[in-house]
Image (cartoon, rainbow, N blue to C red; front, side, top):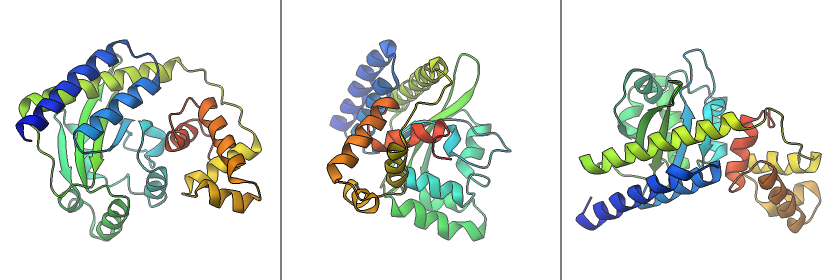
Length: 249
């Protein structure tokens, strides 16, 4: 990173730590990670709890993310979690993991490499960095930033230290917020669920309106209501929240 870029990263991280110190909603954590991702040119982020060795899907482990939900759903449909070299690393290491798709993909079985490369490239995720995290109960997780990069991201020691602090505090805040949520599922109408399911499959409001025979404006209203009920920042966030709560099973 250049001097100006480094100064921007350090300043953004310091401001983010101040916000996270008092953050009491997932929305505030979401906004912090979105700002960090933009600053370091890795616009997609995710907070996950570390999947167990017997887990078969990644989506139930996602706590907060702006990654394309249809990509993760396809990832799970293909059963790609089992041989994930990144998850294997996170289970055994505590240091940050910068990664680049072509290199990390070499650690997968031969019959998975082409499909994984196509899937991640299709959604513009070809590299990034993972920060291992844990909370007060010693539950382990990770915060990732990713995007369309040409090579493995590189950060100075000061940048890495501050980014790791932001990741750790974001994970703690996210787990605390989720643990405080009531266990009951939000009540979504049948039409809201239909709109949300089609959104998860990648359809636009216009396309959903044509499928359901309603106006685009009505679709937007349904999805706005869904976001409010799920305490979601946007539609992608709403899909993730719905998956976590078992609403899209």
